[in-house]
Length: 507
Ligand SMILES: *[C@@H]1O[C@H](CO)[C@@H](O)[C@H](O)[C@H]1NC(C)=O
Ligand SMILES: *[C@@H]1O[C@H](CO)[C@@H](O)[C@H](O)[C@H]1NC(C)=O
Ligand SMILES: *[C@@H]1O[C@H](CO)[C@@H](O)[C@H](O)[C@H]1NC(C)=O
Image (cartoon, rainbow, N blue to C red):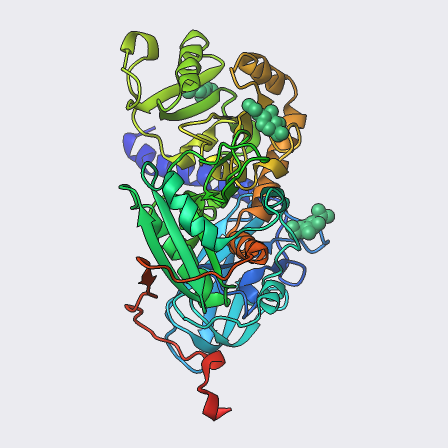
């Protein structure tokens, strides 16, 4: 055979090979979604659920009514949002493929519209009840238009009736006295700790700071301002601890002070709130470069059977057990891949802890089946993101907790490990030997996070906390001397007209 003949035969053969492989792949791709049977639901389809990024879900269903359990392809569904009156809407949309047959659609509105129509399309055919019509005004995040009734807002948001952690935290207080606290708390903590003293009065936010390191107050300011744009807050006066460690160490029988903290512990009485990290991720969704609870869901690594069965951890040296973990990893590299990306607290001994490794994108954690969650300074604030991926979490027992930990069940949502890590190797081996059970735990953890840790629930949690706390107040919250007014941002490009704030004489 001449070379010339070969020169065109080879590309042809390659082409045929590719062609058949593609055909095969299409056949393997499995069930095809049906526009009529596919399900679409979620808060982003409701006018009155105002969130920084609104979101809803698509579950692909085939023509026989079976849910798809693998992705039918990232671009299967197309989502368009149109306004009946404006040609160009300032809405940023993203369709996130969760790789399990479902999609998370998020959109961020930069202006308020009278009505919007959400089109969910499958090969140009409307899916389910598409187009979904949101009768306006449909407010954007920046619009200052609070619903005056808290119960109406909670009903609109489908908030849970109660949060057990709030009930537990507030059960320690028969009442709270803002006058007394305004005196005593700054005296007790104001010198050595970084605190914010907030008063919300007539839905306006006032603050005074104590201590040196008060930069983190921006997270608290932001959530208070965001919430007060959505719903009228009760009048409240309270203290927020801006430090890592919870503060109130007195026994419940002593004169304890209510302090709001991002982290709670078995040995303190602080009232916990969602962490600043989770709160910021909700407020800045689609505006922030780092991870958030939605972007993680589209980046959960390879499917379960292809994930690496070495337990994984990366982080900095903020606790003794983390040093132990890295030592353990060096002794058992076939079981654990744990390494430091940063050394800050302890003296770095390379012979013991190995060289520092390059920072790994959080999304790459999910190449591994087993995620080790181990305390840092306090609770490791990455747990929400670890849970919502589709790996299983091995969680160290700890006296520190975030606002949702007490609702998690060991063996149901995560695999527990001892605080001193002594059973870690044994638990990893158990996980390797019980793959089906472990996969179920991974999915239950993921489901928990999907149901409880998205933005709508975080707003509900804060509101419920403020509302329940307000009921305990026995003196009137006051704007104290030294407080400053925290103003709503005024740089909103597209101011809105709030129908709830008509001047009185117009009514
Ligand atoms: C299909 O998915 C929907 C949405 O997640 C769920 O409510 C339903 O129970 C699933 N159906 C089956 C048969 O698993
Ligand atoms: C699994 O991960 C470990 C540690 O990162 C690595 O050494 C090993 O090669 C990986 N295994 C496979 C099959 O990729
Ligand atoms: C903290 O309290 C929880 C709930 O009571 C318990 O399960 C956990 O073992 C405690 N952990 C530590 C380290 O004290």
